[in-house]
Image (cartoon, rainbow, N blue to C red; front, side, top):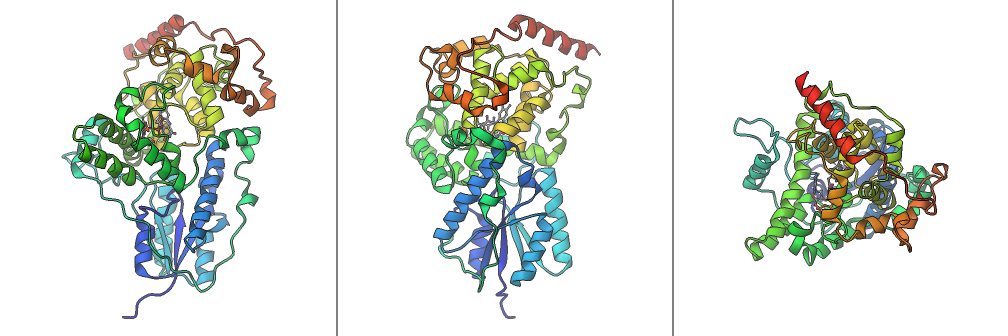
Length: 475
Ligand code: FAD
């Protein structure tokens, strides 16, 4: 049988890297010409403002990396199936390969595409690469999905994570390249308005930046990760979530780097704890795959009767980081200025919205989706439902974070609050002032205005939430 020499279209989505990219490695191993493609379909154009901008930056960085590797990234816009069929016709490609993602919309799109392409005699293959393990590979003794994190981690760790594969040494080019659009014309950052350069100054974009970030973490903060990771003013976490979101680094690469630390230093608490946190990301994808309603509805239906409030002036004050509760506002401003928020503070701002303000978790989840450069549908939904109490393995509803005591514990010196709240400092720093340059002018915010009084008395808010919870429990 003569070997197939027709080009392969490699449809990149959230795997924008050369290293540990099983699809790319497998394609390179065939020796066939490869045509890397990125499509701005609705999965891209429907992203929140910050995530859409950051996706554009990730695509730009990946296109440059492919150029340096002697290849190219072809950019097209439109519905994926139509674009891919067009490219097959233009290039005589034998088929399309891609790396799987697990949100319901992507699964529906990819499943239909696979069926349609195969029906017409084209190759259509999907690969692992977005998570440590495929969502169906980690299963309970009965073969079912996990609903609780600790046994999930035990099963994942026990099963083992496949080792990463190196970047291909060589990619074969097609005889001629199909035309490509200009990324600048997509204007993926348009909705960021004046916040774009501010958030951009905090982002670490592309595969090389992600690898450097991992190396820096491994040579420093991993030592004290377990003890320090809850203190937002400390440089104690990896910051890799924004890179993982676009696949600029693979979770397997990170996992095995931490495992190597544990092998060199048996009992290394920082490295083990770091792997456990990384596994939360997989747990979120596992939940999204097996129970996709986690993205849209209370994961526990018994919460459906809870008197969550809809959008309101209070929710708007929360979004504008003007609640008068400094730890909450600092977190929300950190997100607006940097595109990310420290994990401890994400829990506190989410608890404040869903409990002290009794506002539906979906309102907070949507705001995060608009503002986070590390937005991930699975981790965001799991995080919000975990805090709200409506999710799997969730914090019990009556455990209500008190932002003031949390601040005393985790921001004792006020360094974090002062860094992001100009009104609390006589000489505000650049991040604190940047907030006022980043927000829409229509909000009419100024650092010279006095800091607002608290939106709600913390004791009152707590009692109101508990009363609603107890009422629901009795109902
Ligand atoms: P590190 O502490 O260095 O951890 C390493 C990696 O482990 C992270 O990059 C991340 O991939 C993973 N990880 C750590 N903690 C969690 C967690 N609780 N859940 C899932 N994965 C975790 N994470 C996102 O990536 N995107 C989101 O949209 C997102 N939304 C969230 C919303 C809420 C309400 C909450 C409470 C958490 C959310 N998280 C989200 C999880 C977590 O806050 C971030 O992953 C973390 O802050 C990223 O910082 P890091 O990379 O420095 O983390």
